[in-house]
Image 1 (cartoon, rainbow, N blue to C red):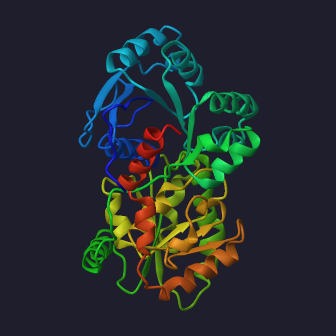
Image 2 (cartoon, rainbow, N blue to C red):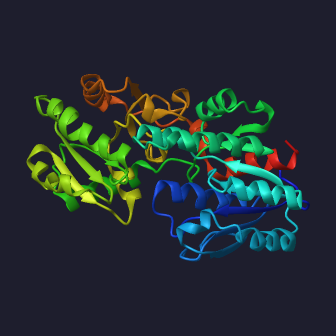
Image 3 (cartoon, helix red, strand yellow):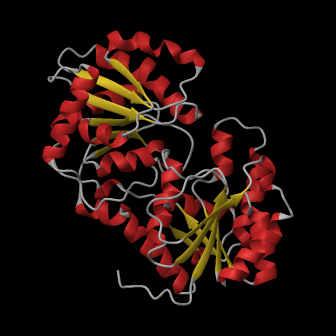
Amino acid sequence: MNNINTNRTHIVAIAPYNIFPAKMGGQKGIACFYAAFSKCVDVTLVSVKSNANPVDFSGTFMPVMPNAKHRYFNPFGVFSFLKIIRKQQASHLVLEHPYLGWLGFLLKKITGVKLIIHSHNIESLRFKSTGKWWWKMLWLYEKWTHRQADINFFITDEDQQFAIKHFKLNPSKCHTITYGFDFGKAPSIEEKSIAKTALQKKHNILSTNKILLFNGTLDYAPNLNALKNILYDINPILLQASNFNYTIIICGKGLPADLNELKAFSDKHIVYAGFVDDISLYFKGSDIFINPVVEGGGIKTKLVEALGNNMSCISTVEGAIGVPEKITGGKLTIVSNTNWTEFSNAIMACRSITDPIDENFFKHFYWNNIAEKAASIINSGN
């Protein structure tokens, strides 16, 4: 993309939760976006006091918000943000998620800034899928918030089209700003070979075994249910295959008490690695990423990272939302939701897929390109 003139553009963004250090997919989605975005436009990012100092962020970071729950409903916070907006002479205000929509509405009315809602899911539908009774109230508030915005950023085309239709939004104010990663090409064959050897040694995996990986925060219901799909639906089918040698590695913190017996699956080709400090080692060293997620909405950040590491990936339709199959170079196989026989067969069939990921995948999901697109939209006045 062309270089962007940022002389007249200063963004104040509000992310009212811990971002740094960025360990989870949602945290990475904000931290990495603003690391790239701050190189395109002037950014003041406001967040809670418990954040660590960001490492790769060329804008201004202000961890000044309290960590208490009342920060979402504190009317006195308006005055603090008025000072920040006026001091920075900001032209745009970005809200991460719709929860502070009321605050954005007031600040827009008082200061005249243009309001941007940066959506990471259709939040109300995400909570509906996890059984929250109050999802309809959030739906109405979320709809109202997006209708107040001058610009709406959605993380997938599917979310954007849904919101245009059901929230009655002006399509010209809606854009897809996807999740990404911060490298512009896949790891080399040598890097992947070294990582695989390291995993084999670390977890006592036979060199003849294909390494299957599942990664996710396990106290989040959609990920926990996906894990149960692996343990009780997919793995029993794989165990019956006489010519498929494999080990499934499960990474992620927050394993609930009712699955503490996960270690008992060790004789069934399951390794529970728990939370790992360097997840990139697992993305580089594993052969196949499995994504049996059937709820939760939004883009599955772990799938994007797996494909970016040139892994073969098997996903449900729900789990692959936001990832265009045509730019994955055959590395992504999508199967129907809850058809675990089809899913298991796809795992075994993808052993021969060795083609590299399509270059267009990196163009689409590279953070620098994503940030430049967002800055271009803002600077064009759309």
